Image (cartoon, helix red, strand yellow):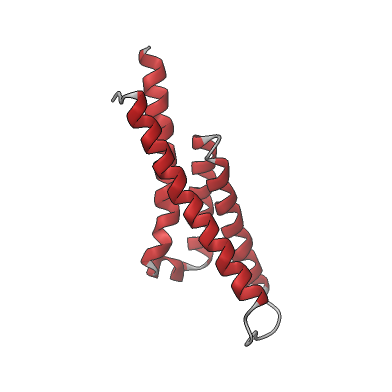
Length: 120
């Protein structure tokens, strides 16, 4: 399916904007919980550290997708799948699905770009 260059650029920036908002929101939440939470319950467990690390890898994947849509999208999707395997409660939070959806949108964007360049 071919799309025009103008539509492709608009779609790319919309998806980038969504990922940028997701990354910024996640960083703000992490900073707020780390430095400004008065009721910290002590050190994090290994499982919590592992989950935070996987989430960070997923967010890095979304950042990489700005340059390399396919690689970044796959990293974000795989990180979410691994996180869901480690902590199935993630699947109970509908807002968490914005992350893999954004990764899938980057992969779809890559496919559109690939199809457009093959038709030329």
